[in-house]
Length: 225
Image (cartoon, rainbow, N blue to C red; front, side):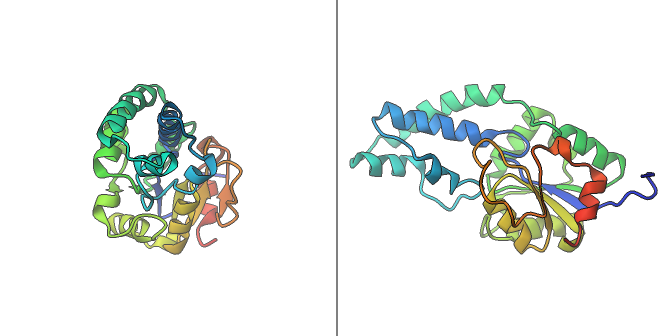
């Protein structure tokens, strides 16, 4: 298809965790390690249900419940953070992310980000990865009253990009994220990660193995779906 005939979404809004970098896997394996060191097990299925939202107990509370006794939260968090930082530094940008950003930029498609994580976490990691300036609008849990699966993050991102949600496409790796984007009225591409593969993403407009499998024209064809 010629560039002139290419279909384009009004904007594309990325999730961050698990979509740009597989931080979700790093979170899970380091927390699961803290559970094992303490003599407990962290249920994979339980943790899957938390992905994409902040509306769940802190992992140290889950550990205390599993052990039936109080835990030293500060010491556990410090040990886990040190391990997480090492693993996170080795995690690459996920396949297709940079290429899709380049294609969107080349065709002047506005790009945003909507994340249930904190602004410090999202912006700090994007800066570390050299991607901070690729996003015109970044909306995080610090900017809204309710994180995903509420639609507020995506609605705010669309307002910031000056586009109608029905003309924009969201990119997500979690069920909560898909629910959020759909509730905002957006088309959504699901890209399951190591923690979410195998879940029921039938509510998404399209499910792909990685962002390498989707381009601008495919995103444009989803608008209104």
